[in-house]
Image (cartoon, rainbow, N blue to C red; front, side, top):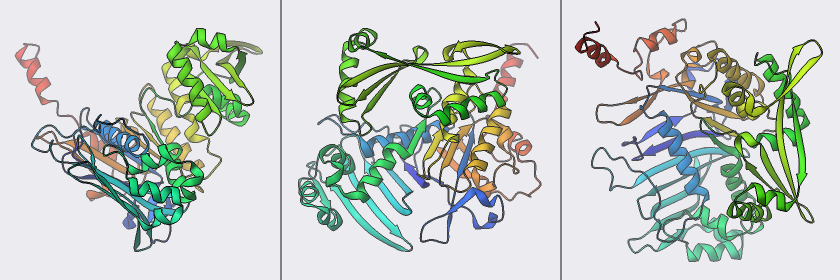
Length: 456
């Protein structure tokens, strides 16, 4: 679970801004099932956060900040390629390091991982284990002016000789030490604790932009009959016109695979399956379905397509390719894995622009279903949206509602509804649209333009 995320000097964030999902004690009696206890703490962490703001205010920049943070945590970088960071450019902060810090829960344990980074190197990096009021540094990293990386961490040295040797070497200056560990050592050589942290970043922190699916849908639908039934039933209940879903999985030859994909892509995918811990690789071909490669004794190649059945008369059904469905239906289906959680892995779903192509009532029901269906587990959902119907205190707690606003100096600030004194019976949506909480567009200049054009 994500407890808090802080960012400074990145894109439209100049001074440090923090999204905190720590539940407010002032609202302890509100939607009690929306908060889960933080291990070894009296605090609780919320299961959802909904961020509002005008176009260009910086909502998606928070999403991009977390996406960049995840890439630094996991991905190796080539020597002398820099760090790829995007500093705040509307002032004198661009030469200063950018800072990122994330508190998160993995396997009932609270951690903090973060770094300070400039255009060329990671200046500092830290991984801390938090138990109650005590913090144990698992490692700290610093890079000097000559690019030499120094790692301090008795914990890492105690795991095994290979990890201890890597601590001595340090790794590239433009690459996080966590990424160096992942790229250099096998899972058995890094210990279960580090392995679980890396796995959470890789599989548990799911960042979904408006054009993405949470998971390869064809592969998921073909491999999980329960999800296939669930997804079809949910689409039918959502008045999409879909009665049920079906999947076709057809084995193809390697020659057919190479005829479908460009040669470089085919080679990379075949190589990736050999490195995959799940012994599979999936290629999303958008409207043409998916390609699945499975490694057993030999490689097997499959083409997967999804069809939606429409009952146009009693007993009469027409099958349509998923590509022929509306954007809204496909968008809803692409997000549905967030509703179908049978484990308690603590996955975080950060969905940017959830309202893209989806009806307001459907977004409301989607979020309600998530909150009602995951009361006993640690899954979370964070969304950015313009859809004001979610500003409903029957659906959300006040500390689950956040606003994003850009100042006159082009700096993004984020703040929760709890910064305002509001009555329990206040119609939040009405007051938001009237501008009481900020984070709305100022459209006065458009009215002036009409006057100047002589239309008013």
